[in-house]
Length: 71
Image 1 (cartoon, rainbow, N blue to C red):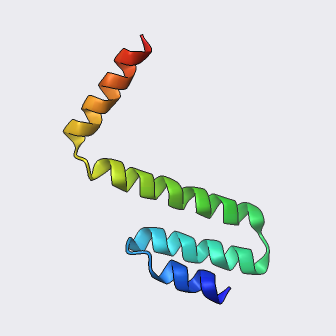
Image 2 (spheres, rainbow, N blue to C red):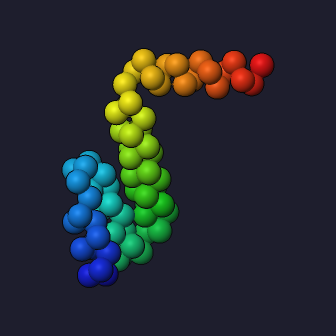
């Protein structure tokens, strides 16, 4: 687990790092469903932060373009 803990410590987003630390605790003691929830939450948080870093106008434009492409 030391390698995973060292890797988690390098995550700069404090919220994502906290979710990953919780996931590691779950992995150590066994509740794998909770581990999966924390891992998915971390992934969603990371994707959301990356998307929102582009700015709301860029996100709205991309959503509109994707919706138009589906028509």
